[in-house]
Amino acid sequence: MIKPVIVVVAYNRTNSLERLLNSLQNAIYQFNDVTLIISIDYQDSEENLSVYKCAEEFEWNYGEKIIIHHTTNLGLKEHIILCGNKSKEFGAVIILEDDLVVSPGFYNYAVAAAAYYDNEPKVAGISLYSYEYEELGWYRFYPKNLGKDNFFMQWSASWGQLWTSSQWIGFTEWYVENKCLENINIPDQVKNWKNSWKKFHIGYLVETNRYFVYPYHSYTTTIDGGGVHYVNDSRQNTVSLINDSLRDDFNFSSITNDVLKYDVFFQPIKRKIYISKLEKEIELEFDFFGTKKQLNYRAEYVCSSKLAKNIIHEYSNSLMPYEDNIINCVDGTNFKVANKNDFLESFSFYQKGEMLYNTRKIYAIKEMVLVVLYKLIDKTTKIFI
Image 1: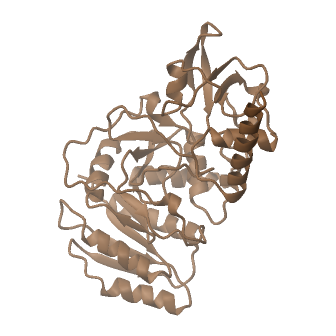
Image 2 (image 1 turned 30 degrees about the horizontal axis):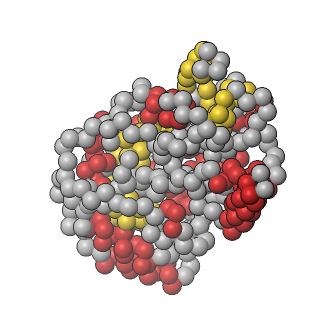
Image 3 (image 1 turned 90 degrees about the vertical axis):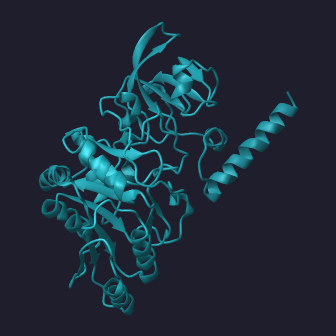
């Protein structure tokens, strides 16, 4: 039986830590010997001392409580890596940064998922968080659901995650030899993250063709957006929590099911699909949000929201998940299938506005202006036709 230790990662936010600890206290545990570690990075400040006092005064009713108050500032990357190393001592570790809260059944799900995937070499971690918006452009994310409890993605979880010792050791052994991500096919913005353990773990997933397990319903949520990497409070990361009790009927998916796998761009992994205009089955890569560059494409044919020349076929965006429009041959003008070299890399503001209008995402001010201009021009054009 795997009984993960819970490691809370704290720094200088007392209110956040107190809120997370209270949600942990109110959760349901099938064991009475669950170890809680509160790991506090160092800062010479009153806030840091207040965090330590909060941890010291907190009464944990389900097992041993351990406080680690570091004497030098580690930074987030090294802090997470040190916490991940606890999996070697305890067999498995649940990492929770202090801007999270958990659902009552989070630990039960974690234990069940850890047991199910512990001996699966293609699984490199288990997420307790479920995305509503992807992290590259804040597009609405619709993973395929076949009635199971989870899917798989080449994207490392950082808002509540579990590693077994074997999963963590696999990453750390790779990390020692791979400090450069330049030649790994991951988004450029990920490569540019500062003080990030996560970009290296994402690189590890892609380079070794491994996946994180993701639930369809979230067992954790962010509640404070402000922090090391998010300066301001950010609501797009706040999701609804599943309010379940103890379960023994989890229906986990097999890693061999490619329909339930997503790549590092939050896109379905490339697969063979029959295209009626070509009268044959082709290997098709997906880029529904247009967040991939040509250099990221790994298949000869791509389906994207981006503009292209020599279009083979066009599909609608009316079905979710979006890949269902291609599988069910729903014609439209939203997604184009073309050779990878025929997609355009630059667009007019009107074309960009059309692309944004046809996808569901959280808009920045500049993007909102483009969408409004597109709709006005489109409406004006139709009046004079």
